Image (cartoon, one colour):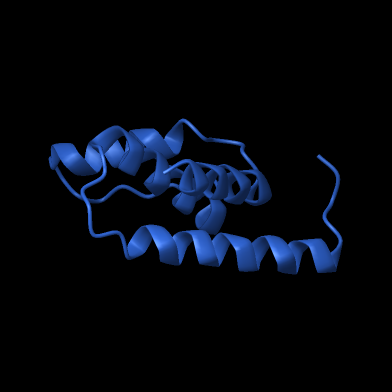
Length: 90
């Protein structure tokens, strides 16, 4: 993937924030598998491969961590695009 121009990066960040805000304000319940995707794309977009897991034996946290780890190596830009695409579908 080629580097984004500064203008395109800003536009992507604005679109990503709008998608995040939209999903954050949803009133209806979202299926668990979809929420895991949102979580994983969010974590990858914002933290990359800097995985951290310190929630003990909490099964829910383990699922979230696993979903994020599956995106290992994905660029922040691609994760933001995937998040935006999923938000538009939802």
